Image (cartoon, rainbow, N blue to C red):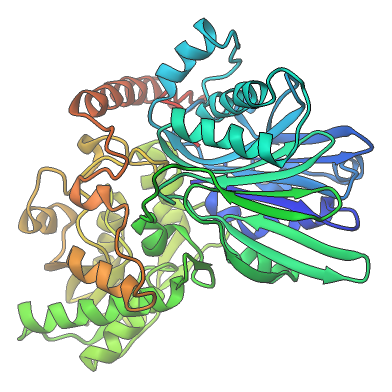
Length: 507
């Protein structure tokens, strides 16, 4: 999960890209980068840290030009503190290309071999995004028949070649020197990508982004989602053209985007994230009424922030008071996307503080969007008891996370997932709750379809173990787990110093 932006405007875009990355900061806190173009030259600045820390006035002044791309990085793999892994990535042959990528390639290792042995290309980092960039560059060279000239047909033919060779999840924005902005999405539409337009007196401006909230805050009108397998091309004059470049497509957006990753004010694949989370609370309340009919509660309390809509609807449906029981420190990162279990555990106490008056002597239902490793849930339940709660029940707005995610979310091994080898009763004891209820997967899908009935398929592999790309084998998952475990040991041994997460590359 990362945040990506691409803009073609009529005036300078450095501030637009900076502001857009600030809005998408929740999608990645490890590194950020911006690239712009002007008079045939690329200008780029990137580095580790939050957007506000990476860019200074001197950096922004050097990012001249009226079109460019931006990226904020969430490291599910690669070296978490290696500045070389920050995006965008650049290659100059056969054309000058700048690329930013959100997702994960599942055949990156094979592609690296192909790049070295067949395409005669060299990779400088462990990032799969650099692999993707080089595949695209090679396909552009093939499509142009070594004429080294680009036009829409050549570019779309190259994207079709990318789709044929690459497996996994990817939403991509690319700057093509001397031509314009290219954006495309994998044939399954796993990772989100939306298009917006702003009409000015100088002509139309276009923005492509991971979430529609970037369009809203930057003053662009939402046009539509980029379709699975589709490529969108916007030249530097603002001319817009698109084409379906995949032979076979299946619209299966990532379910976890709606559960946790996306901002509630975003619209993705025709679905309001906020409305979906409200529906999750409605379905969850129905399950509680049927499975725990005699449950007595004094308050429903959300774990801020993602679970608030679900918790409010749950409280309303059950006729139980909704209360805010935790105050969140806004200056601590999202614990789910922090590298290292010890770091996550420590940050929970720093991030949340209980309001004792809302817990003392009460029977409370805590509501969270999901339970992944169980670290956060366990600490929060302990905090509620320390604040004086009489009974602490726990509700998850999503089903048990039992399987590895290989499409760009940081849960790559089953060993780390609390629900992988435990039933609900065992999980309840493990996190220290008096009762536990999970959302059913069918109800979760129904919650999304209630907002957009046209969605039939979903990428929900972390819940059901079904990988929509069809190329994930047990051997692949075992290899990832072995690499992850080896890396975890190296992190623990070096804890307190610089952590190097040398895993399967993913953005």
